Image 1 (cartoon, rainbow, N blue to C red):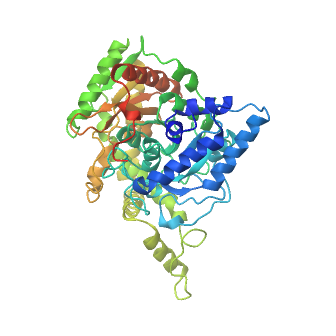
Image 2 (image 1 turned 135 degrees about the vertical axis):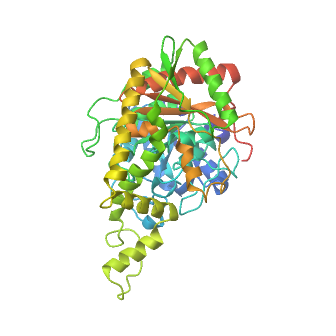
Image 3 (image 1 turned 135 degrees about the horizontal axis):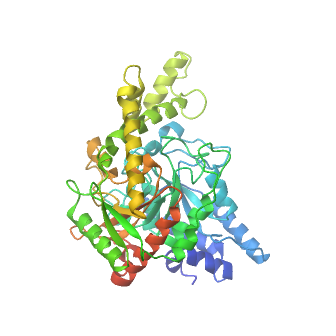
Length: 500
């Protein structure tokens, strides 16, 4: 088991077990993934920065611990790709923007620290839509990432680099963030697993803010169990984050090891289908619902009328919070500074810096949010959107009185071609149609593969939604569905994409 191609195809759980037993060393595993990155990432462009020396140093430390007989954690020595939105001491953190090009943070985000404490090997930082604003990773200031299934198509966004790293076997684990679907939508279009934990379930300290009431970090993997193992590492209360929930992490690993839907009530929301949904996506979703019935679940039809307003509410709330959060990037304190040649005032330097540092999508959202918060428009726009948010939360509460979990397609279509929606922001925003309601309510949700669309042979995602702080239900249902899919149809989603 020293063949690099065999090593990179192991699950994270298998990799950790082989390192713990001494069958593999952490250095061997890390070198195999670094070699894979070197071989394919020029085509995929999943990474913005590869920390080769840092990763090998972490791996050597794991091997030394094992040699000393120290107990290793459940993911010790397993490589991971980290979305470039979490501060990492001594390693560039750009958030996909020219505004922070070359910035080296002096401290670790809480999530980064937890990964290091668990002896997870951080390979590097992954590409993303600038400041996490986008659904395709085309908004990165450093160029788009390709979908390993078809490099001419998008890998989702904003966390397309993390999902592409998984799908191209450059890493067995990754971290993403989800503001309106940026973990789940990339997972769906790359055939991987992505989880948005309950809002506040994973610390946001050290995560560069886009929309503070919506942003949530979470695990990305190729299997449900791997995602659960990573969720357990990164979850938990953090006194440095005022929005962090002071409660134990739900028993996600236990749920993933004991997947079952027998006797569960599973809701299907009528608002999550109709015009704009690709036929193959609907077909695979309907097959998934039938599979859930076969596994012993009771299917309940749900009507959540406020969900139709979620997209509109989100694109007022998120830009409003973004305009506030991004005000700190003024060219005066850190990051990019343009025009500071002695002939411009501080105000002019700030204006020139923002013009040069922010991309078109970020500017669009800042302007939209600033307008929505402006005098005379606050109540009409931002205030109304928050009222809609309350209605959506109430619809979820009513739904969860009737069902244990809700299922839907993760995204209405499979991966679309790079450039197809670049000049049509509204078409781009529709990619998050199914995922946004969960962010507005703060619930937990997962996307996992449910087959390939017959018309284009590209992955389709099944979304599972659970009530807040019931994240273990995601893993219980997800593991059962995953096992049934593998038994019934095999797992083509774990095979190497032909384009590589």
